[in-house]
Length: 194
Image (tube, rainbow, N blue to C red):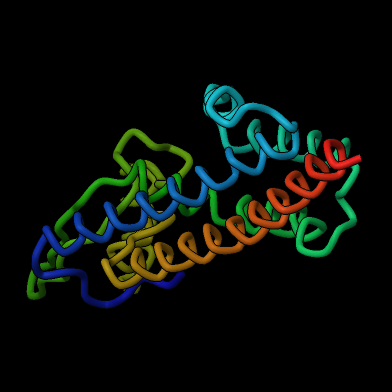
């Protein structure tokens, strides 16, 4: 996402956006925990807690993919959409991590105040270049923008965009969870009605 020319004037606006986005992500992940429990025909609290023990999203995604491949109803409508949904989750997980591990930073130049942005922490060498490398760029041109050393610099509106996407993921996961629940209820009824 391109860096917006002006950041947020009020830091609390940015902090509130971070909180909303991370809450939406956790809601979506909670739905995946429920899906995992349904795929495993397991007790909800136990399976969801086991799902939560795995600390990385990629590990939890692997668990879901394995459970899905073993699930007899994986070709049923809505349920068959789970692999595509997991791909979307994977694509957004990097943004979630940036939001979760970013820090608020105020930027200003000699004649201009740019505002507050959420940026990579100073120790995050994968998301920002070193100060030495950045300073080496500067003498070559005066066109190097202040954010050239950073892989991202988000404003509240950009974080809110991601939060909405996370919320949509939760909605898609809820549909799959409901479909799995209906299949489980039908199987239970068939088992005991005969």
